[in-house]
Length: 324
Image (cartoon, rainbow, N blue to C red; front, side, top):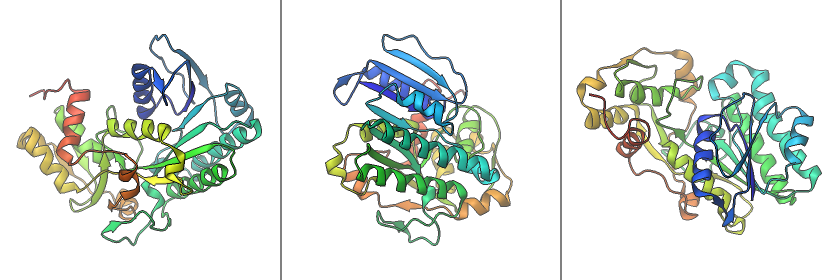
């Protein structure tokens, strides 16, 4: 089993590599090598499994040709720029989020390889107005450039799979929370910031009203989605190859209530409300809660409540204990 991961140096990519090295196998086959692809160089752990790092741009056909020549059996296509950056930089968003995926898919078609391709899409493919709970067959009407780019890749993935060029599964991730590390340029970043920073005694800014509702899953759930998508029988998925993942739908106030239950009033007091119209406008066009029946029926699993999401972060990033 040879695996290729684009966007490998990102948070999800690194956690996926850690999981694959720990498991040592995928789809019942021993992993022989992992090709690690990103636009930045990164350090990787020593392992009995061969790790090959590739630094380059998926929007460059020659680079994609080099990657495809490694003949991967499974591909995790995670590479992309985040929502806020894609909205601010129109050309870069389309180059990275659209052209990069299209050229990767084309490279596989021309090489006549048929690996399992797992593509991380986003709930940003949906656009308002929304019902209270969004069904699996809700139409794609993205209201951001990022959402449009992800929707286009979803269509390409489904068509290339239909034609037999590869075996693709697209997973629409909810917002991954609590993200470790430093804040990024994602418009959704505050959902993690208002939990992560206060837990270590640092102030965090809340730029939207507390009644904003959104759906979340932990990083560990995201890795579980990816592994399951790589291993699931494609015949069970059928022709509708893009799936909305399960998650926990809560308001910002409910997030804060969970934080108070786990860490107390002193920690919650570190959240400062500073409205940001740009972020508010982007978030207002995002979906809230999802039915996600198809993915649940197919065995995808997420947390049951937001308390579990916070505790997952404490266990994974804070050694299972609060600092104070």
